[in-house]
Image (cartoon, rainbow, N blue to C red):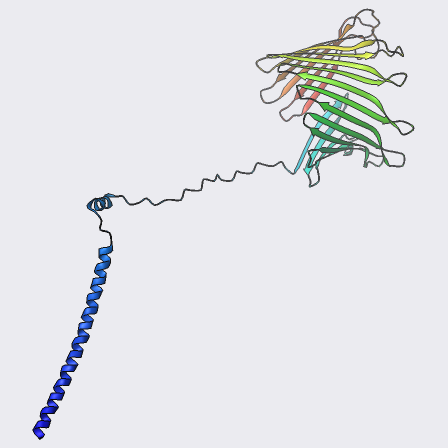
Length: 400
């Protein structure tokens, strides 16, 4: 019995061992199958990929690498350098001696210019001492210029003179307004002066209207002044027509003032013509005025008819010769007593010679015909010298 039981026990143990071996074999088989399925899956993926042809392989081997796109450099030009602006403040001063006979004094001309947020201010000042060490100002003029957004320009001129205490006080104010609209320009001026109480009152109004291009322009100027009753009336009217071309300029002006009856009538007629031919320039100016010997002024007299010829040589020398005819004697002090046509009353010869270092010398010789002398005689000579800095020295030599 005991042996039987041992046999049965061994059998059971053997069965258990066989079962355990089967389990281990199944697990190992599962691992192998898992590995196999993984290999199959990888092979399927590789088979699904496209296989390159020999031509494609050759192209891939010979193809150059793709150029890397470069960002173009910034072609924006560098910012332009700011243009030099006008100086905010400018001062100039020039002093030169003036000699009259045995007396020599210094005359100083000063100029100041500055810009403010409101306007541009210019100051012109003249100093002329009356004794040694005097630094008083003889005259000062202040100009204020303002440009509005609509293109209008406004100016104010303030003239100052010294009073008894040597203080500068304004004696006159001129206000100007310039309006430009295409070929039309309107200029309005108003003159103000203080009254006995020191209040500024307008004493003169002027309006200038210019119409047309520069080649053919018409200008009308009217001046009004107040009457004793306070009304403003026209006291002067001037109409000017101007034409210009490449080699010629011409202008015609008629000025009217009230006659003996208070009506506006022609008072002065002025004609001017300039012609340029190479280095030669000729100018003719004619001025006629009505004769005051008659209240009805039926005729005009010749005040001036001047013909001037100017030539310029290769070395820069400029020569001007002019001849003046008139119904008056030289200077217009009185009428010619010689009957007949207008007579030659003045001849002037002017020569300007430039220097090598920027200097110049101008000589003027004048001949005149007086009230008694019927022939032209030398009356004066003027010598003017200018140095390289712009200083002028002028000598007046009267005829003996």
